[in-house]
Length: 370
View (spheres, one colour):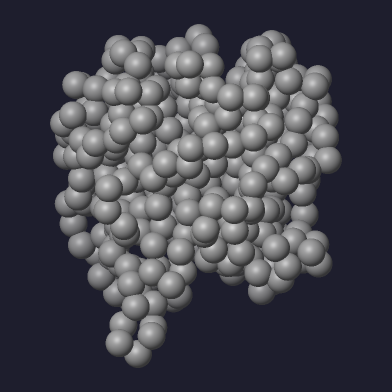
């Protein structure tokens, strides 16, 4: 396997899930990592969860003990998760995250700011005008070369039926933009759906019509073209492109990345090459979603690829993780000041109840792994 395994955060009796997060380099050169930590026995996405952090003072070779960042109660939510960290134009750290409110079956993106390098967080601002169920994956918000911020969302119809049963419908991609460093947000385009309907054995093993566009991510290529990749349930990531800073987008088409129903994660590095992390084995190849009673999502293999600056050619591709009894997903990618790469991803397996409950940090070395 490439790189060095830095640490695991396994589930425990006091927190049954340690999940996805994001990195940022602080002004003093230290690296801050913030992730979602669930309380007690709960591990589903709607269960009580807070944000915790860790600090590295040695370019990601080791991290401090986890410490609380802020709780869901402090912002009036039942759950907070899916962090993206970004340096703002005035020097603050921006922390994008989701607030979940179970009574309304809502999931809303927020932006908080820190003027003291992550010690305190203020001005928690909702980024969408209307309530609803908006999925923003971790480590996903980007800044374009012209300064515009783009936030890729999947909007799902949700709510409760008269009998109290929750429902959660098929997703559509929605792209938000901010031209004032995150103070206000506008919908650039919404309701980007996949151009088909399929009959698919989806999450609960039940046949049904499913053409959901889920968990989009963004990369601006060196040419200025913006690439948006989209999770689907049809054994392949789909993609759309924008030539005008996110105002208009192409029709969704299949990408080169096969996968089960699982997210791709990609980021542009300082040399303009693209680092992509994903699960390459699609559902139709027979990769089971449950192994030894543990839900793995068919995510048993995690691959790394280096693409050229136009995201057209693979320059390197190798396996990062492979375990028939585990699942690997929701990767955060961070380039350190020394040019090394830090990865954080879910890596649960047997004994963890599901693949989302264990968090793993790995370091790739510029002079060895690339």
